[in-house]
Length: 169
Length: 169
DNA sequence: GAAAAATAGTAGGACATCCGACTATTGGAG
DNA sequence: CTCCAATAGTCGGATGTCCTACTATTTTTC
Image (cartoon, rainbow over all chains, first blue to last red; front, side, top):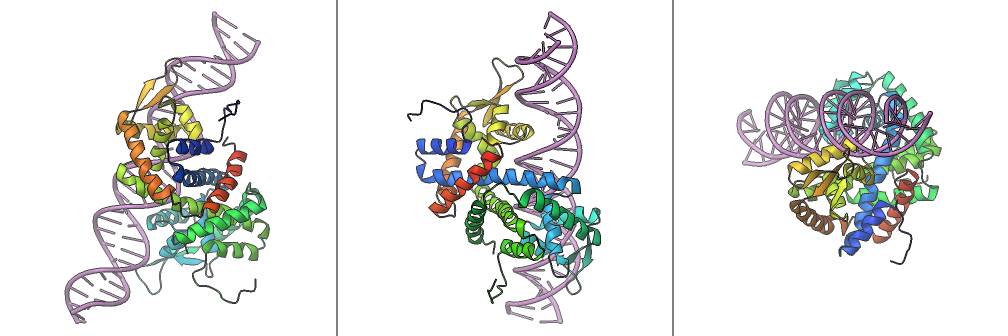
């Protein structure tokens, strides 16, 4: 309250935190800052990832499906399992698989024992793309996520608790 | 690396990290885990927030616009400023303001000196809703964001660096 | 001062996400 | 064994986000 230099481009989240306290919402100010930070950081990270994936004509959502299959034992999983692992709605899986199938990266196969279920199987082209896209992401984003190594560790650790409490695993 | 008990329902991100290392992508494994954690945590946080806001018939995107106006000096801002502060595309602001205006929570007014610009002004109903929605969010989410106080501090701190490096402020 | 560049908003399109509803199949209750 | 709840997927609809134009006004340049 004694800073004579009112910075013009202050951190908007710090600013919101200050306003929260001013309005008597001090007990929620830290939480608000945490949630809001998460939202912004997500935008930033997603944007970086998507820009690397764009040349491969896949979005991050589809890349995740591809990698889940790529890393699975038989390179094939039921739709439902994909949704559970990625924690997204069934209809989102349907949507992603539709597009991946159109692009020839996966194929739908009937489940051998449960006729309700559908297996999604990675094609050779899908595996090849998964490898190339991963190489690009590793080099351009993951190897240098814009955080110090200790920050990365701290972030993963904090968010793991949050994910677990939310039933992620 | 010496744990003899392979848990069945393991943390999917820890599992992915292990696979990254196995595939020789160890230098990118931590970054992958960090970015992926961010994506999941965002989903979790957004879902909690949206479920609290649903009764008020606003989404988080619109709530953010509302609060930005609510906390501004004159409860009125140009579209452009809203986009900059929230770090979203101009067209997203147009979209959000369209819906807020339909709901009678804001009104568009011509900018007094720049005829290109449009001011978005909070209505009395908008201010009232902003207050009620904030009370609900504070009580149901922000006051207990699902993280320990020290984790919250750590998270905000780590993400502030990331946001700054990305040009957020 | 007039032409060129930059800025503010909007329109249309592509995607992803969720929700509710609907079909088909499986499995448990009586 | 039959009926009904649970499960797997898909469809249509609503929202939000970004991108690429395109229009209307400034602002800058020469």
